[in-house]
Length: 142
Image (cartoon, rainbow, N blue to C red; front, side):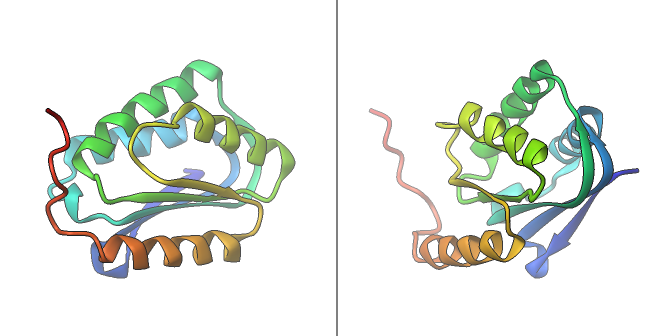
């Protein structure tokens, strides 16, 4: 399979690693399975999507929209998470930016980077900010 999900930072992080030809089915399969089986998603502080070894991308706009909807539902269960995507290839970077624009407003800080180290540095900065937040975010709805 050209995509794998692994846990990092003692469960505080989720890492999706892609390689070869990466399809909408690959990423949607991982996200659907995680959404279905996650037992404690509120403890997750970050997603890191590593697309450095992806050589091509086969994803339709409707699949990106579905991914955004899954992420919107997950963001409600994972309000403290941030998402960084490392995508060095132009086409892959462009699609990742499309997802980022469509996902604006779901509740997660997001960053798309060409360089993996930049993605990691951004996440580390976000984690310092997130760890300073109260464990129960205030209910701002009136």
